[in-house]
Length: 336
Image (cartoon, rainbow, N blue to C red):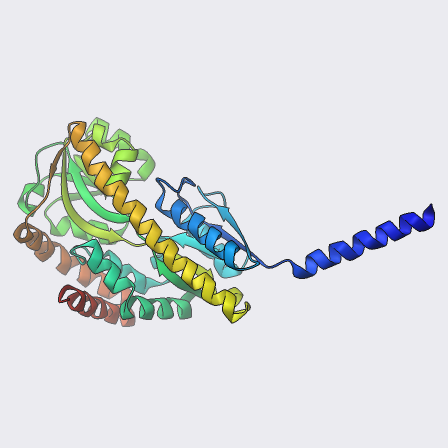
């Protein structure tokens, strides 16, 4: 009996050792959006990345959506430290790689396709390489958080002149403060959690966010007007700890890169759907939505960009060259 038990224990140990030997590595991927792939851009990106990688390698991908591992700042720190391997973040990238902030220069991208062309081309690759040196994180692909638009309760906005005297809630970020000042509005930095109350009580007249965010958070019920000026295009960065990536076989690395690019594309598609559906829904529920003409948008750009570029150049120092690099890449994309 004892001999039989020992034999069983030995067999179990051998089986466990064999299982451990063939088990592949695990990628922990965190983001702050919801898990539902049908409505969440980061959620969709994460799900398709997991399915591709697990379907073509022996790597396991564990998804941690909805701030399960913390906010964006915590996610990039964890990826840098190697306690996790990947993250999908937006604004947090500029905090660890200042050059990434050039993507927030207002009215840089005239359309989503121009933004995609720039980010998927030589500029995006160069920015990825630069941020890799700064952070140890490699940007595998770019997703999308969408174009941001102004809303308000006072009157329709067709030109910067219509913004004069209006108080707009902005994120507590200097770039956004400079932008609204340049357009003639009065920027008022307010925390996101305090925004509904600020709009309800009239502390501010308006705010700015992507259409999907406006609709999903019922801000359209607190605002009468929206102008689709698309002042800032938000990009998602799908990043990975480069030391971890380099430790994998080249064949697995190639699949991870491919999966990330497809994931970024999926995230963009979901965001585009959310935007189109959001415009329809807010309009149906009574919000007045205005689409500026090309000439009107040119005036927004003329007034908003100079002060932001001046401020940003001072912040970037030697990295201010990325402003010119982005302008050149955008011009090339628009000429196609």
